[in-house]
Structures are given as C-alpha cells and as structure tokens.
Image (cartoon, rainbow, N blue to C red; front, side):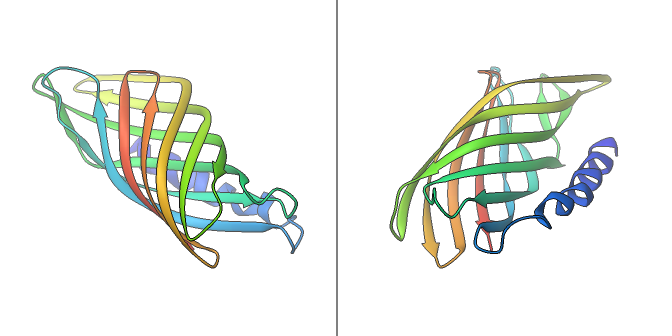
Length: 160
C-alpha cells in the first residue's frame, strides 16, 4: 500500500513546476506499463504501471529532461517470496529525429523494494535504450531500462 501512496504524492507534486514552463517549450505527460525483472536465478517478473513527464526546451529538441514513477501492479516471485518495486527516476534523454527514432537515457533512480517480510529503500544509477514512433507531440516507445545491474525493466510508454 505504501507504493501507491508514494505514487500519489509524486503525481500530485508534478504539476506545480510545469505551470512555470514557457509556452514555446514542450511538456508531455505519459503512462507506462511493463515488467520488472530482478537479475537473480529463478526470479520472475513483476507487472508494473506508471506515469512520466518529458520536458524539452525549444532550442534543444533532441534532448529532454524526464521523470517517471512506477509501481508494481502484479507481484513477482524471488525464491518463493513475493516482491514488489516502486521507483522514482530522473533522466537526461536523447532522441534521434524523425517519425521512427532511437532513444537513450541516463540518470538516477530511487526505489522501494519489498521481498516477503523485508523492505529496502535505495537508489543508484540507471540507463535505458529504446525505440519509438513519433506523431506530433505523441510518442509511443518500447524501452529497456537497467537499474544498477540488479534489475531491468521492459516498458511500453505512451506520451501524449
């Protein structure tokens, strides 16, 4: 239940800085769904959902600042224990030009992980690679994100 409280706090706090954005700059909101897979033998993935925001300055169209939050919707399994993950991330992203594009991101992540009766809060570096389809301001992306060699996520992201 804590992960959904954290998700609600982040989503409610996000609009405040966006209100100050120059109308020529671009702010795009999005949703994401996918799976989180720990880098452990015998682990299975947890189903995740989340939301994100992309900010692009008018003079640097290929670069963006991104923030996203994800929470477990369907628990995964590690060694017979259920696990769930909640993440809050910030990135610098780069996208190639065109309707079909490649995407690279580098940044940091804070995560709250619950495995059986144990809870851990931590953070680290994160990076991702993806491909997408652009239609106006809308972006549809398939992305692979690594988190400190301990886990990775595969997500489908839709920014509108």
